[in-house]
Image (cartoon, rainbow, N blue to C red; front, side, top):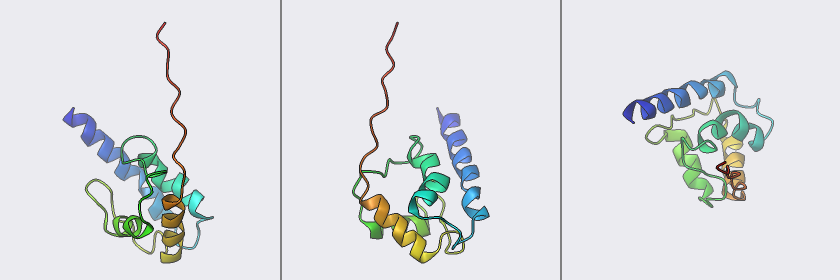
Length: 106
């Protein structure tokens, strides 16, 4: 079980390099940042599901800049302040994702 968590954390950190490759000011809106950076963990069960959680935008900004537990911090050179504010507002107002389809045993 511990090795699965370690693997998941390493995969998450590896996925975060896409944010480093993208410079602040180059993003095409909050949805682009979400798909390219956040959803890898936050839509796959590695991190907390943020869509529909109704977290305050200020909390999202704080955790994004400082990191929290396995989540790395993202510098203003990776996601600019205005881009992060727009992303945080978009996440804060987002609807929850549709439930995953259930597999039926045969």
